[in-house]
Length: 347
Ligand SMILES: *Cc1c(COP(=O)(O)O)cnc(C)c1O
Ligand code: SF4
Image (cartoon, rainbow, N blue to C red; front, side, top):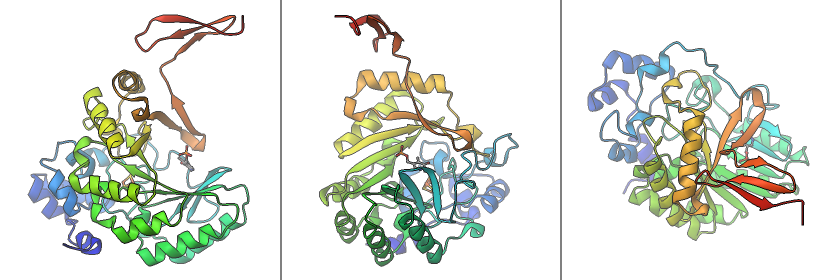
């Protein structure tokens, strides 16, 4: 069995090899990969059957990425919210600490597509330390979200150092790690890593699974290992055309996550990032999908449907309008669409 470092090193990154394996146009793949890097881990190579299947679409270079569109590179204005290179600080109580700029695999729809895997955005350990110093100077920060890039590409010893430094800041109550590794590099979740994370409780880990096929046995084992070590798990899914934009797929995903002790947390409306327009699902459809989920799965398995407003205006939960009117009685629309009266201000 390879170590996770060996698995990462064995990943397919050469566009010609990727094109040959999946029958893509050689020149087009090379052109896309020269702007937006490609990396297919051994786990992904077992999951992708064809370029247009639900996993292939997420990770294989596509011409749509270079198609001219009117979409910005940084719709959330993260550049403006970065007081230090490794910090994105939008909400007073919580801050993103970018632990690095590389990912185990590169999702083609990534919000940080402009920077992940690009040498120009390399983040040094010094930048990480500067970020921690920034957090220490801001007592309003209660929660630190390690993001990136993928924070779990840090070696255990480095991660331990970073988490230890954060834990020694008295006002930091909660740690969160956002990682794609359980899906794409499950061998990263070693017993040693799970133990290390468990010892820094309260530490929450958010996974990123978009399709039930990603919940392969190795991914399930990684989740079980984390949950068993006392690391609460929540999942973020991005709503993607041709991947998970139907109720059957989303219901299967959310049900399966709940069985793995992973609470579905957010279903993200795709951020309007340059080169990702081919993945967009209209909000009307997203609302219908959430309503369908509400009818079909446990309430514990229904994520919040979130849009992150452009210009750094923050996340907002989108719900099928349920409150029709308020007053002596409230009129509420049921999941089935009937209008139901509920006693409200009156007696
Ligand atoms: C999404 C995000 C957070 C975390 O938001 P939650 O709603 O707490 O999950 C924090 N900071 C930034 C900049 C974000 O984009
Ligand atoms: S793992 Fe996360 S940061 Fe990396 S490419 Fe995918 S969505 Fe982007």
